[in-house]
Length: 161
Image 1 (cartoon, rainbow, N blue to C red):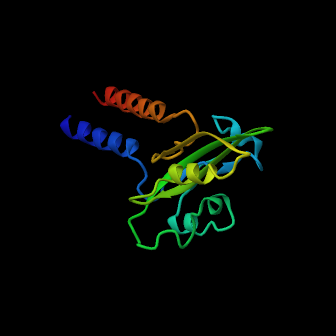
Image 2: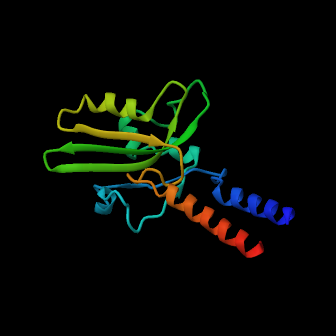
Image 3: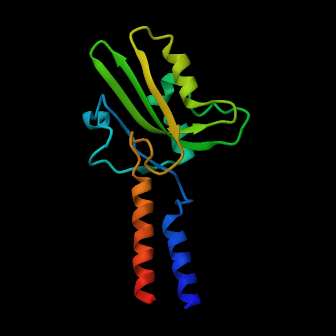
C-alpha cells in the first residue's frame, strides 16, 4: 500500500511541475490580431520563448524600446519572462503580449514606460511581466489546472485503497 501511495505522490508532483525546458507565452499584437485585446486570448496557443529569438526580434515590437541584440553588452544573466503591455491612443487600446527578457538591472516594463514618455500620442495604461507558462493572458488558469491534477490523484488513490 505504501509503494502505491509513493507512486501516486510522484505522479502528482510530476503533473504539477512547470516545464523546465522553455517558458511559453502568448505572442500577439492587437494592431495585427484584434483577438489579442481579449483577456482570455481565445484560440491562441502559448509559444516557447527562446532567448536568442527574443533578443534578435530586431524590427519588431521591442526594437522601439531599444531592446535588441546589443542591449546586453555586459552579458548579464537573462531571465525569460512573459510580457503584456497596454497603451491608449486617440482611437483606442493597443495590446502587445510577448516573450521578453529581464536583465539583473533592467525591467522590460520600466524600459517601455520610459520610452513611451517620449511619444506624446500614446498613453501608458498597463505593463506586467510574469514567469509561468501562459501567464500573460490577464486571468490565470493555473490554479484550476492544479486543482484538477489534485482531484485526479485523489480519485486514483481511492481506486487503489
